[in-house]
Structures are given as structure tokens and as C-alpha cells.
Length: 172
Image (tube, rainbow, N blue to C red; front, top):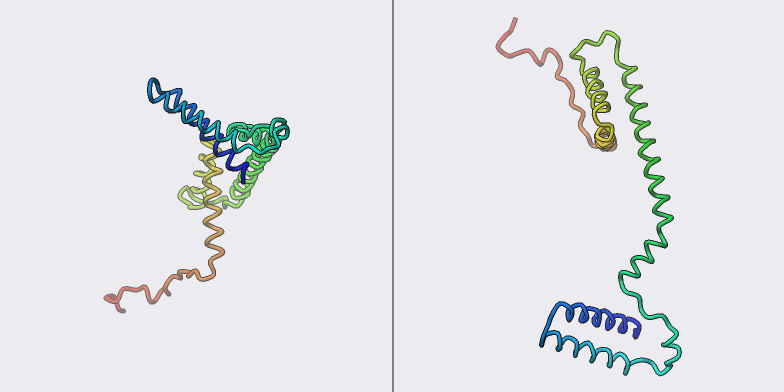
């Protein structure tokens, strides 16, 4: 508990030093006086074991803690960067493979307005223009397909029978 209190006092003293540097005149004098009072209070509340306190390292600032944390995790960050690069490569290869499989399934006699052919042409153009955009688009499309397939209560629309579709006004 006393370490937490000491750390809080240290932060308050640091804040007063920064504030005092930004002011001049009477305001600066008052801030420096308050800083001195806090320093004296810290000395009075220090534990009697002076040699132990003197050899202990002073509490580190938040910036020092952050830098230490970054240094501890810098090798992990490099590994994660490599994993991310490989994942994007595998994702790109997977999309290219699925696109080639879909192109192979297009019927040879498909007309110029065939839906499957038009969709594959659009995806091919998207891949040529912006491969990252195609990856993003395919991720969304796959997520939507998965959601549709995983919904057990979906209602499948069926076409009405041919005789029911005849207009009521035309009877033979």
C-alpha cells in the first residue's frame, strides 16, 4: 500500500514540476512551495530502514514502464508480424485457387449475360485492379455465406407451380 501511495505522490510531484515550469511569478513560487511540502512529507513518511530505501531503485515513470514493456515484447511483435505476412499470403493464394476453380466450372457455352460468367469476370477484374480489395470482399462474402448456411430457420423461397401463375383473366 505504501508503494502505491509513494508512486501516487511521485506522479503528483512530477505534475507540479511540469506545471511550475509553465508558469512564472507568484504562481510558480506557490507551485514550487507545494512541491517542496510534498517532498518533505515523503521524507517524513519514509520507512526507518534508510539503507534499504537508499539502495532500492526509485519508482519508474509511466514512460519507463511502457518502454520496458515494449522491449520485453519486441521479439513477440516481430513474430506476430511474420505470422500476419504469411497469413495474408495464404489468404491471397486461397482466393486465387477458389477463383480458378470457379472459372473451370463455367460452362463453355455460357452466353455473355450468364450470371456466373459475369460474376467471375467481375472478380477477375477486381483481382487485377486491387488484390487487397478482393481479399476484403471475399472475406465478407464468405462470412455472409457462412451465416446463411448456419441459420437453421431460413426459409427457402420456391417458385409457384406453372398453373398457379396464369393470370385469372385468361381462361381457355
